[in-house]
Amino acid sequence: MAAWPVENAAVAVLVSGGPADSAGDAPGAVTAAGPVGDAWSVGDAGRLFRLASVSKLLSAYAVLIAVEEGVFALDDPAGPPGSTVAHLLAHTSGLEFAGSRPRAEPGARRIYSNTGFELLGETLEKASGIAFPDYLAESVFAPLGMGSSELRGSPAHAVWSNLHDMIRFAAELLAPRLLAPATFALATSVAFPGLVGVLPGFGAQKPNDWGLGFEIRGGKQPHWTGSTNSPATFGHFGRSGTFLWVDPAPRAACVALTDREFGTWAAQAWPVLSDDVVAAVRAAGIPG
Image (cartoon, rainbow, N blue to C red; front, side):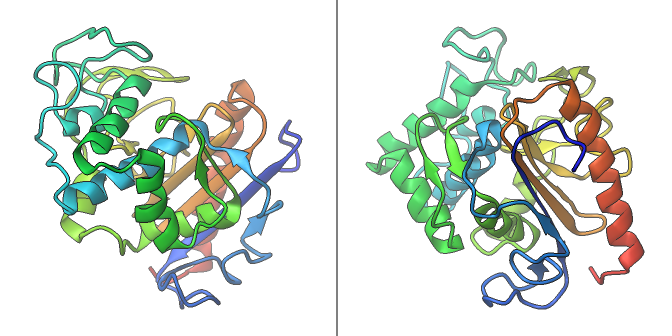
């Protein structure tokens, strides 16, 4: 990280299967020395960063909780004609990146869409009667103790958070407590398999695998995770220079927050860091 061309950065690695953290609120998903331990985190854990599209993971989690609470169902209509809540989560509604014009029929192609996530927020608000920022705060931030996190605009890209809070969210993804196991498994498995599309920053992918809000690594090449990350790795990266991935194979997670916009530097640096993380976790023999 010392060689990264960024002014500020904060990175953490978590592993599943260890003892509870020092606060006792994230059993089985911890850094080596507690929630923000010296050995497994670098940078100012309290500094706020704009998450950009990593926000979609948090927004998707709120939508999935709403599904479990009966606010709406995954197959309920949402977005353009023929599209559902699931289509919007999986970027298969046909909507363009930014705008209301459909470019394909629902389920025909993977078209990454900020508009789709904004429509998810509007759909949840109409169905629940609760403003989306409030629903996100009450369903995700509060129960996970993410007291510094806040949605300041679009559900697609406007969450601000810090490493301390994102460690807590990564811990949830390693050992889910807010979602039922079946819902979590569905969200982190490929939805509408076999669809081609463009992974922003990395070009056309065949297939361009995605879950319900979570990008799935699959066989994508090139990719922002490492070559040794398993195909089951899921997560997201953000244009603001942020990422979060969870790899079920070594049962590890990595969070990186920076204040430099994604570019060639990140496409080159992030896979190297990810491979080093996977190697270090395996070499440590941490039980998973």
